[in-house]
Amino acid sequence: MGTRHSADPRMSLSSSASSSSTSLSCPDAVCDVVTVPTRHGLEAVDILRRGAGDEAVGPVLHDDDCGTLGFVVPPGTAAGWDVPGSTCTETDGRGLRLSPEPSVEGSDWLLPPGEADLATDPAVLRAALGEAARLIEAADNCR
Image (tube, rainbow, N blue to C red; front, top):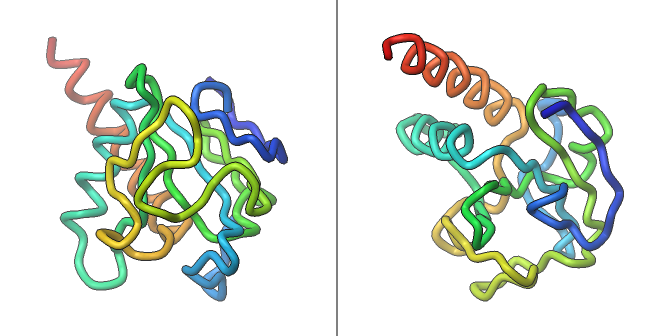
């Protein structure tokens, strides 16, 4: 899976750059979403939840087929996202609502809004995804 940038407002989890000044909120529900394969995403969630202080994880969606996870990140992240094996989608506030009931058909919240920070810091997510990839590779090489 390669890196893709998308402005698809429907934000399908199945098909679907950060600076330190990026706000970790999604004003008016305008967020971007980083999607990754489930195994990679679950490792990243574990890494983020074990982190301290500012390294908190925001809301995370999963699809009903358990194929992908979607991390809610601040708007503008998609413009500079370049992490291999992931996709960052701009939602422009359409197709994604930060409410307890997921707005994308065929999905559900792994970490719902209200139980998580407003958005995951893209730089922290990038680091967690890198660490997750290394952990998965090491585990696969032990077989």
